[in-house]
Length: 259
DNA sequence: TTGCATGTTCCGGA
DNA sequence: GTCCGGAACATGCA
Image (tube, rainbow, N blue to C red; front, side):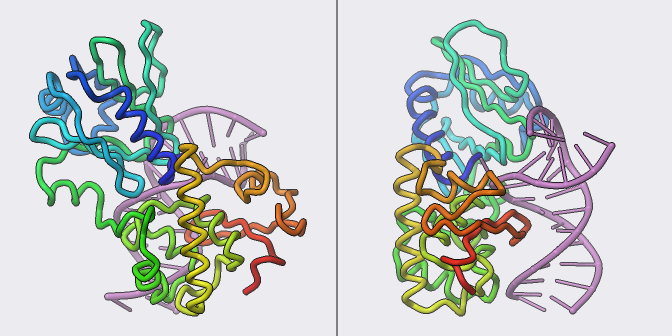
């Protein structure tokens, strides 16, 4: 699931369950997900430390641990899960932080994404790659400069993490649908007015989704209709259409979103 | 059995 | 250099 709003939910979750007391031990149940350190040095860096300053940049969740920084990416199936009891670990729990009062699991079925440790800005950037400014709160002028100059299709541009960070497949489709812009339209052919509308709708979708920790699949949202290939546009009732843009399934309304 | 899935990266080609 | 499509990554589900 994880796009910007989901990771924002994980940030709050980490803040609630993973900070304020020291990590007693680290259980690396699947070393594949530790992307830039062997389990032993990862454990040494974290055990006895307290996580502080949980923060998010795009789809990345970061936290300070002593002189190091923990970086988490959730791929398509990652999440955080707290448990206070002594139930068996879930089979997809890959890395588990043990605290005195319970444990916090980095769970990830498909093993895209992972967990990194960084001790410097360059080391962090090697993990995350170049990231544009976070999509949440991006000012209109900056959005216009970043997105409006690109020749590529607007949906693909929105999803490029080095342009702006945090927008994934669902968020891009939702904002484009609301702004009535066809996902295949070249970004640099959008008028000022339409770019402004796209900016406004994206900010609104992000703000409302962040409160829920997900892009809500509610009535009135494209995200609430897109899974069913027989769905109609929640706004005008026209049959939705699907195609591939930027390697992912784009969903749009052929009546509301004309080329 | 096949196709598809909300992410990223790498490659070849236009 | 830019942009695109396709494949790969790993796993589960319809």
